[in-house]
Amino acid sequence: MNVHEYQAKELLKAHGIAVPEGHAALSVEEAVAAAKKLPGPLYVVKAQIHAGGRGKGKFKELPEDAKGGVRLAKSLEEVESHAREMLGNTLVTVQTGAEGKQVNRLYVTDGVDIAKEYYFSLLVDRASGRVAMVASTEGGMDIEAVAHDTPEKITTITIDPAQGFMPHHARALAFGLKLEGDLNKQAQRLAKQLYDAFMATDAAMLEINPLVETEDDKLTVLDAKMSFDSNALFRHKDIAEMRDETEEDPSEVEASEYDLAYIKLDGNIGCMVNGAGLAMATMDIIKLNGAFPANFLDVGGGATTEKVTAAFKIILKDPAVEGILVNIFGGIMKCDVIANGIVQAAKDVNLQVPLVVRLEGTNVEAGKEILDNSGLAIVSADDLGDAARKIVAEVKQAA
Image (cartoon, rainbow, N blue to C red; front, side):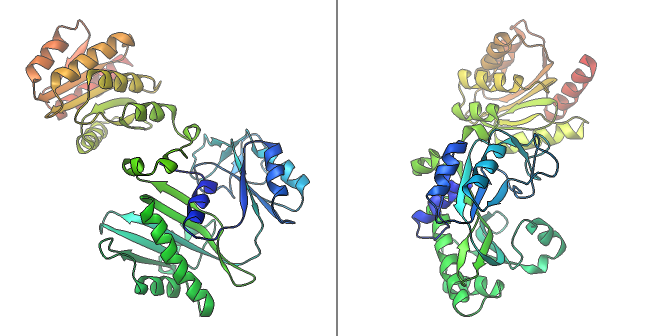
């Protein structure tokens, strides 16, 4: 789960990390009121969307030369003008795709005199099974280009969670940023604080870009992005309440209500599978046969008929879906339960696209019998390869 910048900073502040003063706003009036609470005379008005690259982003509804989603304001009048232009409009960045994201809230912060920008992040490194601390002397909006063109400017330190954060990690980070004197000590303290916040919140990623050195020689968290392990949110009800469903695909929101793992993709073959590994293999074999998956959907190991019905309906809400492949290996999940869900969902939505089903495992014969006696045009498959070939052929034939 992702949160907005202002929410990430609230969490960091709760862990003793200093951040510039700021306030969220849902309207132009609230943005002006937020600015009045700040010292001024320099303010920063920031669009709050779940995507990076806001500063270089463009608004669809504004002229090409209009400013991006992060703007300086030297007066309350400028704050009002920026807020009026941003709220309700669609911001397109390198991370949103061409469709962009509508700006529904802003973050108005106090201005900071910047002497130097750095980059810092913490993330879960799957390759090493450790937490990776990544830092660079080249912070700011072009960090992706730095990583691609000059990787030697990036320092990566892995931390064994069983051992925890140690003083040598802090020193390595500070020296990687080429900081000296008091700034070096500040960086060491901040690295420890950020690591503690990362672990305490079960974060999957914490990115500070930029981490800035101010004109008065202070290190300050100027921007913050955080995402969290959704499986751990039951331990963090305060973080779970920060979820902004308007930033998510409506189908993914609906799927989460049924405890389904669903991610919308750009293809035309809908997939319903049990097990993440099997789901990925299913998507791969669809591509191998010349088509593209429309989604990742894992119904899990203990799905009910109602859950399967909901999954089926979610897939069919995608207008790009031209066919559906159901691939179930029944262990804990029983094939007859899946079959009942498929039949019920197909009847409820008046299925009009080809459907290929491959069942194997517990109660497979009962499941196949349910499908055969359903009166629906369901194509059975013997194995995964056969299922992929059949759904691709059925879609081409129906086109």
